[in-house]
Length: 483
Ligand SMILES: *Cc1c(COP(=O)(O)O)cnc(C)c1O
Image (cartoon, rainbow, N blue to C red):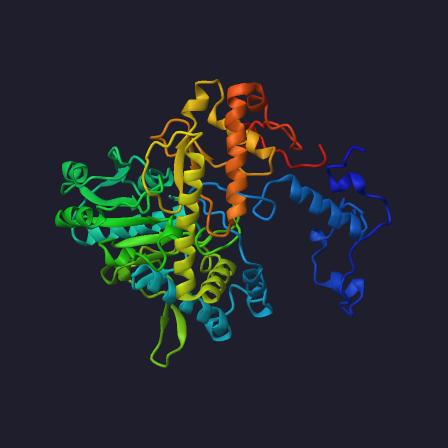
């Protein structure tokens, strides 16, 4: 039986799956408040479907897509860990969910308290005293941080315009640099996959506003020269930005604020367990040193003399406002709930287990795939499909084949410095059995590449749709039912 894809196709006049609450008002009374020109003249074309059909429809749709609750999701750098349901319970408490974003501070005490406590925890985790929860994505946090850097240099009276970025950096780093009107200078990682002090020394001068560094970097390697690199950048008056997207490897082990960084962003939706992966609402909180606190975006959450929390807009050095209201509040609740459930020791364990899982999986995969940087890794690692490419099987084919086994692909073709890269991040929430199953699937695909490459190059075979024109889908998106 052909599955009907659209809920409209299941519509039968007269069926319904809803009950509206009784407003105790007549239709005329309700309509009285609505100007004539805003009233409908015809009924909205809504599908008429009974409740069980609606539920089945959406459950069936949800399993057509891959998601963390369906299967393993080793998408490197994205930290696709399982998100405890308790976070959702907390985020949906009436007091949070029903709070109007324009409600005054005096009636929003609980929400402000959550933001305050979350800020304190982030400060403790990162070593930065100044926190803003306002940015809503990692990239947005980068943008905020670089605006702060620009404001700082402006006040110093210098017109620096360049930012140093390693060749292993995430694409959002150079994008953020040009968004604030700066110019990116790319430097090369050494043959061990990390940045040497000499390459920083070679480009560092009084034109350079600062440097962005991801730690551990996108190869999953710890940038062990950071303290010396920070000294070089600081000696020339520059600032150090840490891209904190990979914080899942560091919690309770290393604090960016203690080692020479001046600012960083967190990805609440990665490290601190908010569902993500469809472009949904994120959290890109930033942390800065005491010296940079005055530039934080307004409003800044502060305590008055009576110890009451309030939003301070009167901050003359602020870079201004970056988002409506105060960012994505529900994500702050999730991050806060997660931190409280885990506790300090628990967060450290998260990072330790993330690192152990990645190293274990790396060892399982090394016999079938090339390992361009053969070192102890942090929470993720990069393998290369070079060997398979020579047999006519590309990394993208391997990733498509993984879908047949109910596994999401690793991050492909990134970092750019590794040909046929597959960046794998298992996360701490996966069991040993899951890692071993994934390794045996990867082994099977490696055998197929040798013996029956067309099985891989024509994959996926068992998904509802095969190979999609992803660029076309994004550019000529059509979500209309009619016409
Ligand atoms: C995910 C990621 C970013 C960007 O974060 P978004 O929340 O997707 O904007 C930046 N750097 C690295 C290393 C990342 O993995």
